[in-house]
Image (cartoon, rainbow, N blue to C red; front, side, top):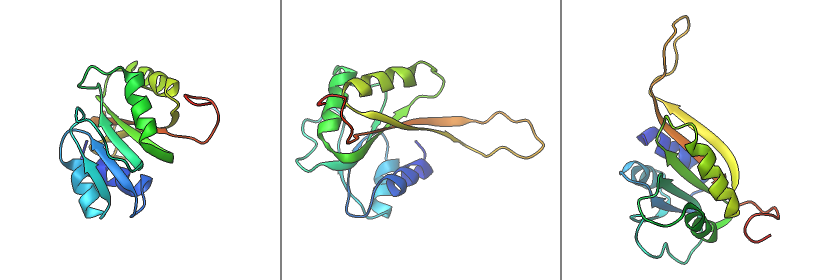
Length: 152
């Protein structure tokens, strides 16, 4: 994830008093959280306990480093989110099936698909055919208020 993507996630998906749980590798999200003066739990994904307070945003890398099943992981995320909160899943670019697998596991855990962000290094230039150097795919999943999912 780039620094710019970290800033966009923090600014677009949270407010100043909101809590963010950082399960992603690298310092990019931590920098964005500090710059935006947000509160966060900065944890390694394997640590037990994400805190007692519900978060507005959880950011995680994918695939998962531990042996937890994806559905169990997303159930834990759902329990740690406020209603309307989001999970941002950072995907390696290039696997066209992986986003579908993530969305299916998240849906089984009661999270809803909200958005798919594709980040590129440079914008296309008018009149030039250029392949974009895509560096991050981000799936945004939401804990909705609608019935269905894990508890409805």
